[in-house]
Image 1 (cartoon, rainbow, N blue to C red):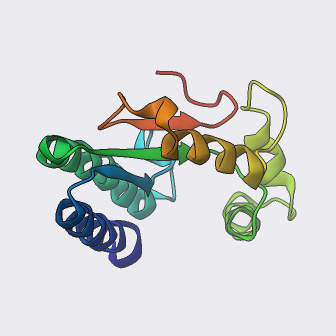
Image 2: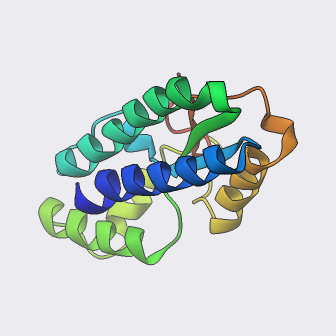
Length: 150
C-alpha cells in the first residue's frame, strides 16, 4: 500500500499542484495492473492496492478536470520483467512446480500468445501522454494481450 497506493497518490497530488499552478492543464498517468480489474489468489494485497489506484484515478480525474488535467492509468498483464520472475518463483513454490512452470501456465491465458514486453506498455503510456488521448480521463485501461476482457 505504501508504494502502490500512497506513492501513486503523492505523485498524482504533486503533479496536479504543479499543473494547476502553471494553468496549462496536463496529463497524469498512473500504474495499475490487471489485478486492478480481477483479484488473483495469493495476490490479495497487490490486487487491493491496484483496485485502490483505479478508484483514485477516477476521483482525481473528476476533481481536476476543471483545470484541464486528465488522469488515467495503464494496467499491464504478464510482463517479462524481474517482477514476474519473482511472482513465478513464489507461485511455483506454492503450487509445487518448477521455476518457469507457473509463468508458462499463466501465459497460456494470453490471447495474443506471448508474454508482454516492456515496450508494449511503453507504447501505450506514450499514447496516454499524447494529444491523441486528450478526451480520455478517469480510465484504467488494460494492456495485457487479452487476458482480461471487460
